[in-house]
Each structure stands twice: as C-alpha cells, then as structure tokens.
Image 1 (cartoon, rainbow, N blue to C red):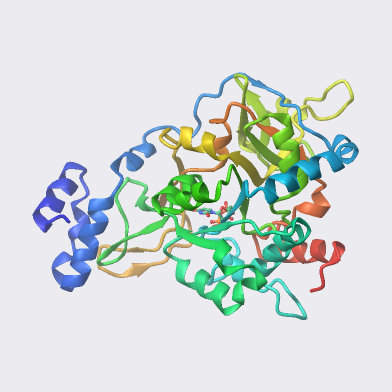
Image 2 (cartoon, rainbow, N blue to C red):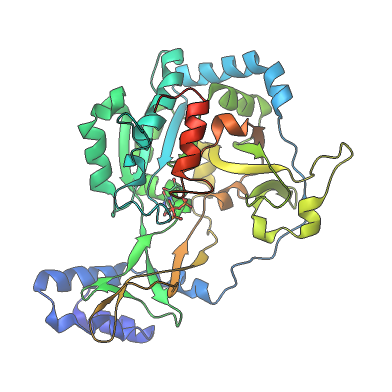
Length: 408
Ligand code: UTP
C-alpha cells in the first residue's frame, strides 16, 4: 500500500500529479482506493502511446486451410477424434465476456441481452444451448471458464445463478475477472472517472490466459487434465462451442492451435485474415491489407487471402503456458471516455477524447508455431451481435437464428 507521499513521488516521476487534485476532498476509504489504483498502474502500458500501433510486418504468404469439402468428406473421422478428446476430459472452454459492448449500447452485460422476440431468450442462454448440443451427444460436460471484468462480474454471475446455469452442471462453470487498464487523454494524461477514481476499462481480450492463471483457475485446468482450450466470443449467437469436428481436425493435423474461419464475402470485407507471416501463423487486420493483397487471386480464381477469423480458437494448454511470459503488443485505441474536468464536473464526450490500451487475442496466434484454419459455413456459424441495427446487429443475428431453426 502506498502512502500519499509515495504516490505523489511516483506520479511526479511520470508527470501525472493531477491525479491527486481532489485527494483532500475524498473520504478515507476513497483515498485508500485511489492510492491502490496508483500503486497498481502499469507504466509500461502508458508508454505504448509513443510506439506506433502498426508494427513492422514480416513476409506475408497464404496459409492453407481445411476447407468445407474436405471437412464434409472426413467428418466422421474428425468428430470421432473430437468426441474422444471431450470424453477423455481433455477439452475446456473459455467464454470471453469481459468486453464493454459499447456499440450495442446496452447497460447490462452483453450476454444478458434478450435476443428472443416472443420468448425469454438471452445471448448467454443461446450459447449454453449450443454447448449443450455437444455435451448431450458426448454424454459428459466440459468445464466452462467465463471471463468477466470488474464492471460486469457481479451481474454476470447473478444472471447465471438466477437462471440455474441454464441447465448446465454448476460445478463445471467457473468465473474469473480480467485486468483493467487506465485511460488517458490525447496528451497522455491519466483521466479520472470520479474525483477519487482513475478511468479504467477492461484491458482487451488478449490477457485472458494470464487472468485465468492469476485467478488460480489454471490449477483447475490442470487438475482436470484439460489439454485444449476452445476460446470464443460472447456475441456470436450461432457459435459452435467445443465443436468435435473442429477439435478432431486440429488434433489430427498435429498443429498446436486452430482457428475457425469463414470465406470472405468480398475482397474489401472488414475481417482479420489468417495468413503466414515469416512462416508462422498470423492474423492480418483488414486495414493492414493493401488493395493488391485483398484482391489477389490464385490459379482457381479464388481470393488468395480468403479466410476471415470469427474469434473461435483452439489452443493447446502447454503452448499457452510457454508463451505466457511473452510481451504482448499493446494496441492504443481512440475512444470516448467520460472524465472529471478541471472544475471537478463529469463530462461525457460525444467524440473520442483519448486513448485506451488493449491486448488482443489475435496476436496470440502469431505466438504459436502452427495453426489450422478450419472453414465453417458463415450462415450456420457466424451471427455476431455488435450493434443494435445494421451490420452485425441484433436484427441480423435474429434473422440468422431463425434461418437456423432457433425459435425466438
Ligand atoms: P469486441 O472487440 O467486440 O469488444 O469483443 P466489446 O468491448 O465487447 O464491444 P465494443 O467494441 O465496446 O462494442 C470481442 C470479444 O472479446 C471480449 C468481448 O466480451 C467479446 O466476447 N472482450 C473484449 C473481453 O472479454 N475483454 C475485453 O477487454 C474486450
């Protein structure tokens, strides 16, 4: 625990003493909390502003995928291998639910969003139903670790409890809380969201394995003998979770990770594309692709870089442990950040006013020596809920759910 004097010295060193501007107005409890926040600050993170966001890329080449026709032909073999791994207790799942879901503009955790129209059906329930389709066939459950953030943890846990874990064995569901990162204005000055509280937000989805470890739940992973973790996002309501064919195909390929991918709808589609970078798997973001690269075609006339990721990955646990200590690239993102102004009043900006810091799971792919891109049918497995209306929205997800026979 820092004293006020120690905190001041530390803040002076980093030219951030304004953080204590309202210190004397705070209650003893609030003062303690603010000092604890200062003590916890990751100063290296703040220095990421000076570095450019775009790191030098290596040599980019295409990465072959297992495509739908091959998957159809080898389905039985893949499913058998995947089900065996599930039944042997080698598979666990990680639900990434720590995001703020700002684009949706829903004030509760995104997973609690009522996606049903005529019946009570939340996004979480949809996901649990998808998972149970697999565990019913396997005849056993798989452990599910849910990552929340300090902003939505209590609401998320309460929701699962109120809904009796949607019929899933409670002992197989565990929650862990991800770390937070501070936010700064355009001059790199830390923002306060209250007079006694630094503005913070979840530190991106790239820190999930470190947070799992910190929470002590990695011991549970080991105790159960889990060898593979399937990581997926909260917002894709058509998500196939612990998909035996995907697991089987990845294991049989001998690769140390797998990624579900969809065929790009058009060269300019805004998705991260799986490729090889200096011979290692890598995801190149749409804004990093040159027009020439996006439009490049192979001998069959297909886009050379045609597979977009959908945030559903499989990682070998021992490899995750190997890379845990590696430094992850910090992405500096412009955002609208509510803050306490000079006069001590709360401002809610309409336009971006500063930066947040995030690490991203897609950067983990490049830390793996090998990855199997596994193609899925977009209309059957990809219905992300990012916005209320328009592209990737509640509206489009509802249409896709209906088309897949889910009663709403
Ligand atoms: P998104 O990139 O869509 O971010 O997350 P978001 O914060 O949920 O939504 P916006 O951008 O504010 O609208 C993709 C997945 O990663 C998780 C999200 O919960 C979602 O499942 N995520 C994101 C985390 O778990 N933690 C984070 O810090 C960020």
